[in-house]
Amino acid sequence: MVKMFIFALTLIGSLVMHAQVDKLAVVTNGMDSDKCILTVDTDETGALQNLHVTEDKSSHGSYPLADVQKGIVLVERSNRDIVLLSGADLDATAGGKVIISYLYNALTKRHKHKQLELFQQDGKWVMADEQHKIVKSIHFTTKKVLGKVVGLDEMIIK
Image (cartoon, rainbow, N blue to C red):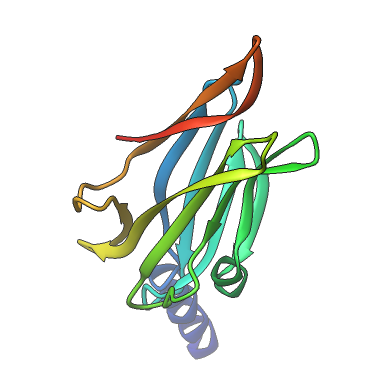
């Protein structure tokens, strides 16, 4: 009976101290109807563990914090890195700056960049823009030449 009680307490404790998953943003673009969802998971103390990228309800990738610090590819098309995310100074407990780079011109390989801030607010991880507005969605408009997409023109944050 005592063993069963200890097992029950252990089970309840593990359920209470579970990791949390926080949704950061929904990412869309003007090229297609694909939707990419960025989430992070934490350990029981609230420290960042992984960034998850889900594309159209299937897992696109799960990246440990160390990989995010080095830089990861969020979107790839035709063997080209279209959207990248990096956070060299990102800390598991304090958060920090993340840079989203996107292919502005595939012909010249020119990228544009936006800096966002990742931090905890009311017990959840969120991203904010330079004006400290919480990011809910990111939309990329396309840049076309002669009807062909040659890059992403603008990153619109809402």
